[in-house]
Length: 302
Picture 1: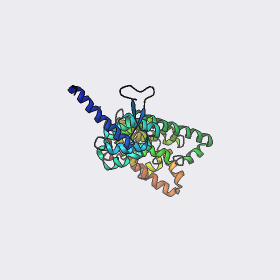
Picture 2 (picture 1 turned 90 degrees about the horizontal axis):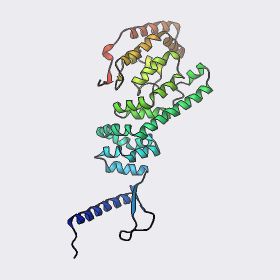
Picture 3 (picture 1 turned 180 degrees about the horizontal axis):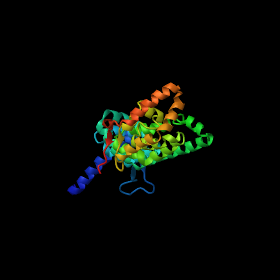
Picture 4 (picture 1 turned 30 degrees about the vertical axis):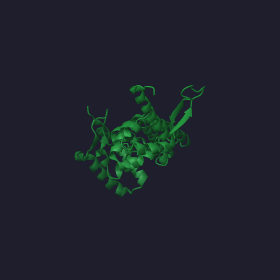
């Protein structure tokens, strides 16, 4: 019997284990095996290539296989490719049950999934589509009154869902992605369908509180459902955001208070007697800074 060096035996054993693992993945439908082109090798035969199957079913199988080590899967090129092919919302729908069940999985998904190049690109494209649709509607509704009447009607679930999805992740990464990709586009689109007196408020409100601001809620609802409490509600102060941003949101209301009240009365058709009563109430709420009600979701480490 010929002598086989120990190192070579180890190599044969390792190769055998790798092949068994690869073949088991082929049987599960996670990998696909292809034969190399050209002439087969005299000793080893035709070389085989294994490639991952870029289908949603593969992702479901890998989620089960990586249940205890999700980070390796969620930061992989495979996930990035899946988002490129199918879109972020489709991939999110598959991992959503895991996020609901496991806080740890949610944190890992927030850290890796929201920073993938394909995710960022997908959200940029969503913003571009929103701008394009709004521009076409501006042509259809050229007068300001028509544009105002379209506010709220223009935001389909297709536009709102990307923001609602982000709200289910860790706010630190979710707000960063929103500000990087959607904020300016969403603000510019919504501004064209809102009275001018709301513009400054909308800018700061959409920046500070993206998951409850427009288009999730209309500006009138935000300001008057609970009179001006929005000025003292929490905002996400991360990265470049400062406490002054909260002040800017409040100042936008002080500065445009008469015009905002006029828009409220136009929309609600309140009688003159009730207008006077409500105006006094709103002046009271806006004049008293309920500083204890201010909450800050994220603090800039600087």
